[in-house]
Length: 445
Image 1: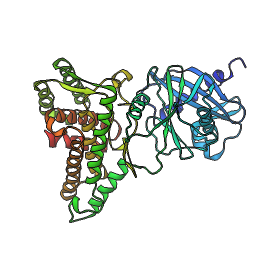
Image 2: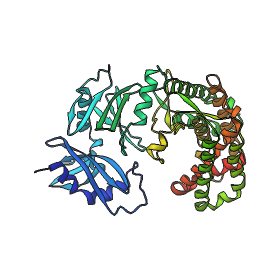
Image 3: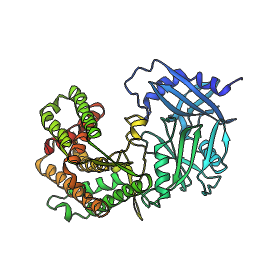
Image 4: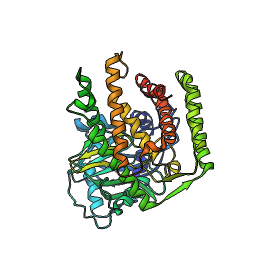
């Protein structure tokens, strides 16, 4: 065949049109996939099983798809099936440990294969022959663990140019940050980063799971306060606040800061109003809070002096932090997935990250009772947990950086703006949860 990989994936476009919208990382849900177009396909592994790397345009977005090809599809790979081409079963190869192990070997060998470059970070020795396994929890990307030594994140929606996640991790690593997992290597096609490998933190627990376990402990107790429950999270919240402040300080030292004056502040306020306009059109329940929300946003215009901005995490919440035996670690510095790569690359106030984490504490407190008839006592206990941990986080942050509560007007505007975003997200995806951000807006206004 003249271009066997390209022809093979081209033959799968109808199957991909049905398969892509079912994937957790697919961003164009609800859109009509009138066309799926293969922009690039290259064979990385020949034989049975074979592996083809493809970039596919669908719904106005570019996606990375790794297609495995087998004459017989084992039972454990059946859920990953995409279709059949030339008598071979095509499937999502990220579920195939044998094929993914080859990607690790390519990073170890700094290989150039199929137009892709696999590179270890300078000074990093990557062992070959490691067994690969996909992790079970997926979000907007797909991650593969190699023998508990490092984890490779494959960007499902790669964008040309510098990759924010890679660049910020490299800057923090060079600054000696203890709050990140060290970079290990990359996979790229020209200037487009397709994958990023980091040291695997095998002793880590996800922040969301740790926090919500504490909430369950509290709600299970009828008479105890949050500070009296064995699973009280406030100490961890304070340590997390200090870790976030340390990351902000390291990013500022490595990449600099600037002070923005009234014009850019006005642009930020206009963006908040614009987002509110869009959500009001979708969620009528928000209308009763419109005046208070607009007043909170407009209060930012009246702040004296400028606002310090820098590179920050950009999408910080309890699901983006890990608790290891050595302390808290921040992960996934890609920024907010719903905005463009250009917007993600903008400098922002560190209070944006603080606001995101404060909102996450509210979610952790209330998610267990979302969609249920919440009695007064359980509602009060959940609010108590949220308030206690929000306060502890800010107090911890203030041990390393400036106290976020000293910038109350700006922090309040950022929190409410985030809550408005959450209202739209929950309205579209989890209607039973829309009460969580709506309740937060009601309390704050």
